[in-house]
Length: 325
Image 1: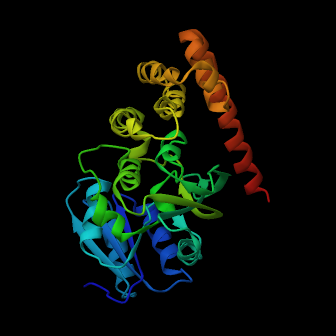
Image 2: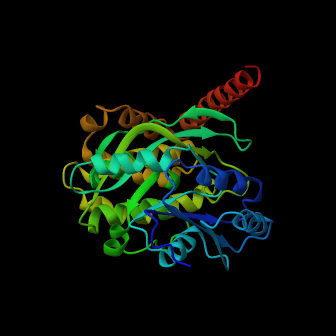
């Protein structure tokens, strides 16, 4: 049933998120902004996800479960869009959670934003599979156009951080169900390319917790991620107008090298170098790219070991500190 009085449609694509879906739903139902409808699209889960949603939906009329066959998060989001009508849309992944003021604050940012803003996003905290917060994601604030979305490699960082005008989807279309990964990033770029409100606007408040690399997470398949990102960059980087298109490849090349995908790293580094060595050397990411690219297989192996050891130590240290507080 469509809720014609809702200001925001909240859509959760859910696939085998039984251990976390209850927490995600609770974070929506606790929102201080009450004018929303909530649709959870079960993407053919084989665990108890759907049953948990049914139990919670029975006690709250704003919640609606739609069940379908497993077709991916893009298809699930498209189903949610087709079944709702509210003028604003927000997506919350089934393993993430919102601050209770997420909707209220995002709507306020949207109202205060300049003309041309179709999407607002907040900052993200990172949590472990257990739900323990271990860090903050750096994200820009203010205006993000096509060039910035590409050069800073998807500043919203995750699909749970945005509030989007429904008109953006009406103009740019729905999620690409043929992409195995990077589905959200491609959608944001398409909004920036085809919507009459193409600007993304970042706020400085941390209002979403993203579960990092939990078991079974689609985004943990780095190979599929890079394959999809390769197609997305090839399509959208040539549309850049303020900056050299090669700069869109800098961060993806660094990520590929870090994860041991040197074929992608080398190819993307070659595209990035078209912007010029002097231009790359001006930024921290450009300097990192040059180091990875010039290090060769042996040098890159050492860099990976150093990075992985440092990163593991940081997360373990934060987790220990949180336990003994």
